[in-house]
Amino acid sequence: MSEEKIIRKTIQIKNSLWEQFQSRIEEIYGTTYKKQGEAIETAITNYVNNIDQDPNEKEELRSNINILEQENTQLKLDQKESQNIIQQLDSQMHHKDNEIQHLNKEVKRLESDNHNKTDELNSLRKQNQEITSKHESEINELNQLNKTLTDENQKLIDEKTTAKLQLNDYKKDIQNINDKEKLMQQNIDKSNKNNDILQKQINDLKEDKKKNLEEIEELKKERKRLQTENNQLTQNLENVETQYEGQLTEYKKLVNRKEHTQEVLNKQQFELNEALKKLEKYSYAMGKLENMSLIDRLFNRIPEEVKELVAAEKTEELGE
Image 1: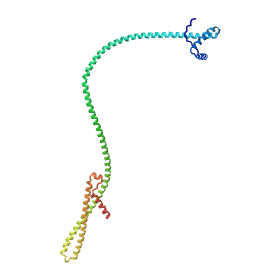
Image 2 (image 1 turned 180 degrees about the vertical axis):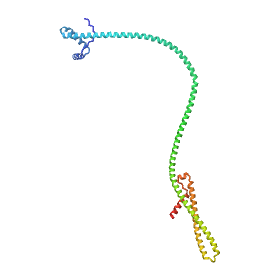
Image 3 (image 1 turned 30 degrees about the horizontal axis):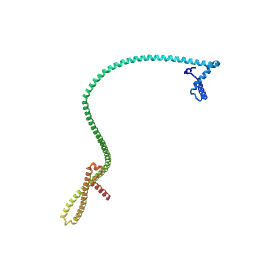
Image 4 (image 1 turned 90 degrees about the vertical axis):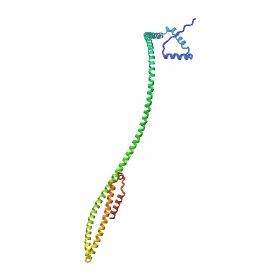
C-alpha cells in the first residue's frame, strides 16, 4: 500500500474550541508536537465514517461549507480588485517608461548643453583669471589703504579716549568750581552780614564824626570868642599897665581873670587838639573801611586802627 500524499489546508475554527482541543491533546499525550495533525485526521476520519448517522453534524458541515464558499467568493472579488490594481500599475509603469525615455532625451540634451556650458565656463575662468590678476594689485592697494585707515581709526579712538579722560577731569574741575562757588556764596553771605555790621559801625562813626565836627565848631567859636576876649583883655591890660600905680588892685583882678581865661583857653585848646586828633583818627579809620577789598570784607579783616578806635571809644563811654 503506497503512502498517501500529505497536503496543507487552512480552516477557520472558534478560538475557545481550539484551546480546548489543545488542552485535551496535552492531557492525553503530554505535548502538542506532531499530535495536532494526528488528532485532526482521527476526528475527520470519525466524522466521515459517521456523517450519515448524525444530521446535526451534517447541517453544521453544510454551514461551514457555505461559509467557505462565501470566503472563496470574497477572495475572488479581492483577486479581481488586485488584478485591476495591477492593470493600473502596469498603465502607470508604461507612463513612467515614457517619462523615462523623455528624461533620457532631456539628459542627452542637457549633456550637450553642459558640454557647451563647460567650454563657456573654461572661457569665463580664463577671463576670471585675467581679471583676478588685474585686480590683485588693486586689492593690495586697498589692503594698504585699509591698513592706513585702520591705523588712523585707532589713533582717533585713542584721541577719543584721551578726550573722554580730559572731559572727566573737566567735569571734576567744574564740580570743584561749583563747590568753591557754593563756599564763596556762603562767604559772601557771611561777608554781607559782616558788611551790614561794618556799615552800622561806619554809620556810627559818621554820626560820631558829625557830633565831633559840631563840637569842634562850638570849640572854635568859643576859642574865637575867648581869643577876642583875651585880645580885649590884653588891650585892657596894656591900658591898665599904663595906669599901674593907680589901678594895681584892678590890675591884679585883671591878671587873675586873664590867667583864669588863659587856663580855660588852654583847656579848650587841649580839647580842641584832642577832638582834631580824634577826628583825624575817625577820618583815617573811615578811609581804611571804605578802601577795604572784597576779600577783606568776606573774611571780616577789620583794620587794627579801626578796632583800636572802637575799643578806645567803648573805654571812654565806660569811663563816662
